[in-house]
Image 1 (cartoon, helix red, strand yellow):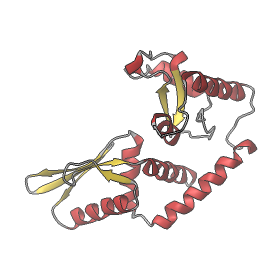
Image 2: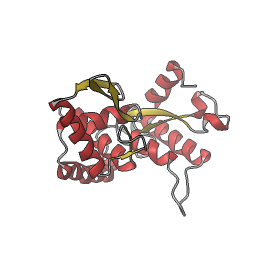
Image 3: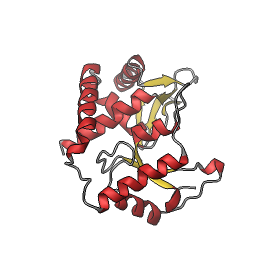
Length: 208
């Protein structure tokens, strides 16, 4: 079950809205994750909660051959260190210790610019990433309906449908989403897709 709002609020306050792995300030781009997965008996308590940005959340769940996955004990230590740094006033948005992540983010920003995605493609990608949902293009009588997270739109059968299909083709071509086998009607974000969505959101926040 999801975390109770009071528990999530407490965790987000203690970490100062920083990701507990990369330690970046991600004010509206964090998810509260079960350190011990619910499927393995993990409870929705503060002791079992950690705040992660979307990119790090995907890394925690990703299995790669010949690499060491995050253990329960390691995640707890990362979380407690961030809690302590925030409590001591040593971790804030402008902390110089985050420079290595800012450099990495600039590199990813250059990548997003090189991709030359349309505004619609970015909107679809970010909307799906926000709630970790699939992108779906449903066939209805006389029209098609697009859904990506909280964003949905009836795209008809004309120009808007062509624009939507082109936007999704861009995402597929750049390996940001992959077809999940429903004859071109459902797509799942790739790890690269979540990274690009993460940076796109950060860029949007910076310009607000």
